[in-house]
Image 1 (cartoon, rainbow, N blue to C red):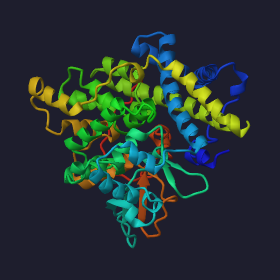
Image 2: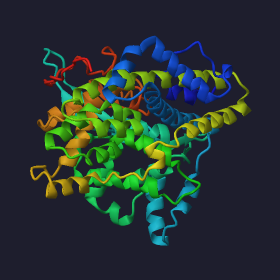
Image 3: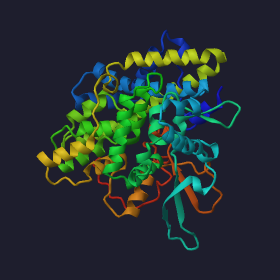
Length: 467
């Protein structure tokens, strides 16, 4: 078995397993559905009934909405497994040639690119590989403050964008995530000389949402555009890239939300209510919830997401990923890629009606906020799009910058300090990887965050009535 696969899925591997095996079923889709139905009957009967009542839909329709989420996410993770099994990416020279740059611009960029792609630059070699975020003093006598850092390039990006060439320290470029790679690792000369552009790129690469501005959101919108309009027919998988970037930033969900006729507080409230849903990407269920949610039902929808949709979908995905990894570990090496492709094709067959596959997506939330401010809600702040993104990802606090950083770290980051052993006392590194974008175990109070007992005075009065 490829150790890179085990390392990537280490946080969920062996955690949840099932008695059902893939080879007991005539198709992979049947296997996934069986896992889903078994989970429903064992653990989610009450929650399923509540969700059907809230949504006013039947069991078949609800099952289809849930299974679409599961198949979308399985497609994404199967693509990562396939990428690691193939262990073959695009070489640096081929990527540079594909940019088709004029001679002088090619020379300037190729020099920067070669430096950026050096293993000691992409790796984590000392404190210069990280960005200081904030420090916290626990107010105990004799205990110095802890300083918190985040990698300059988030683990999530490193997990998907790069492929290690076998038996070398050379890192090639993923053929499936090439548009996101270009957005993060390439810029025109005019952009390179634009301080605001380069600062935004730094914020996006290190995931410092607390420092985002409208121009940062606009730059992220450009990444969405690049993915959707990419003319690289043989490069980049639009679906996995959209799923990934939507989990990171949620602009499709927010764009959908801004089609509703709401007041300012309702937009913020609804964004908060669907926060955990965003960890699952974007699906028909997102559209349904955003369409139906209102002030009276927002708490009920939040409860449905937290207690039914998110835990059941992630549990089902986790079981399936575990079985897939064990299954391909038992078959001949040369057959593994064929089986993963077969499983991916089964997922594609089940998500053809998903809006992220079938619909023309919109996500220009900065311009939508400007339109709403001009024609409907005059009191919207200029940075309302930024507030919505923050609310969707970590419950915007509107406090001073240090408070905001501490709360964002608590909400967003996972503890990778053992991996990132900088060798400096009282330094902690917080980061999130591709697994944590979906499997973050928010429902487990003991493991939800390394900051779980670190109170920064958040006032959370969410009503937890039965939905």
